[in-house]
Length: 187
Image (cartoon, rainbow, N blue to C red; front, side, top):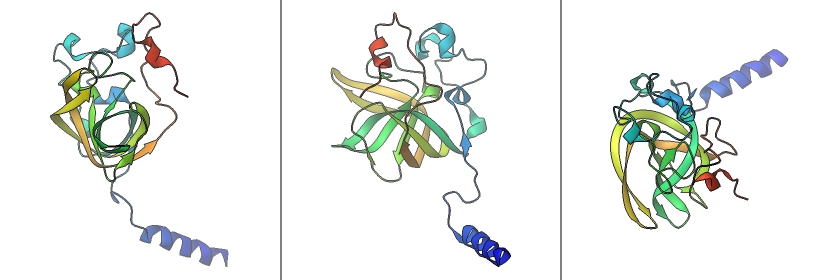
């Protein structure tokens, strides 16, 4: 009887449709999006910015092209209506792009959720799952003191988005940084 139940359970599992049925999800970290030779943000004591890098952070990791990935980061809305977000930038630290210098393009992912994502505040920690495409694209970001044009190096369209409690490889700003207030957890 148990053998029969096992066969039915296996058949049910195989019959279930899955997103990207043939693709396996690869959990990646922010370092996987930049060349191995590029300095790590923590090594410099402050987050890396495009202007400091010889290639301005435009060298992308093509090894991940068209792979189904999952990456955790902070969502910064680009296109929203109230608390529904239709497109956002995924960045590796809070404050990136609006309160402090912009990360290099290879550390910014333009995300279009499969369904509008309900977001109560900017820099909400999320995990994004979908097909990663190296794609240099510019987005207009409306911030308090005007408009900023941000270049992202990757895109994930039709992404599954889920809230998370922490970002595993998040950059923590040094205590003496003028932006260290962004390290504090929001309650």
